Image (cartoon, rainbow, N blue to C red; front, side, top):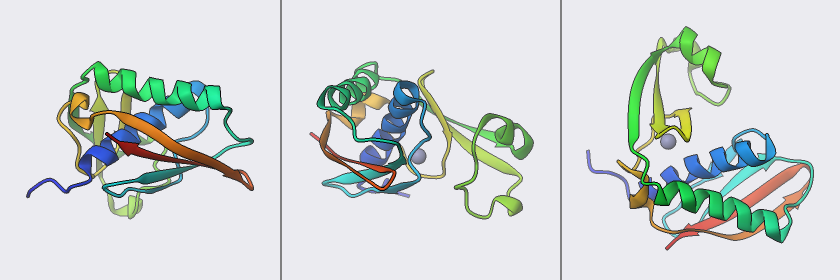
Length: 145
Ligand SMILES: [Zn+2]
């Protein structure tokens, strides 16, 4: 099957989530809208980001892209996956016996069935276009150049 047009955007979502987790000890986004031109991720958060923080997160993602991390996939039995990951967002969890874990070098690991780049440099340049905060939800909009 040909890779969908937004696999680069979706791969950037993985890196953005890891950047957010590392920097703010928050959870990965609970909702994401991935589109070819512009995407957005929503996080449970307690405040808006400062301009300096937005810059820093953007830099984190671009550093991970520049490191050209290899993207690898591994089938993991459910009990092991449950120890390592939060699987709340996985549909049909009860029916699954194995999960596919996607790793981006040593930087990120996440159960995912989506399509990804084969190494992070393929993503290109990552830019946060705007952020918003409302009722405990931080929204980050981004694009790739
Ligand atoms: Zn994915």
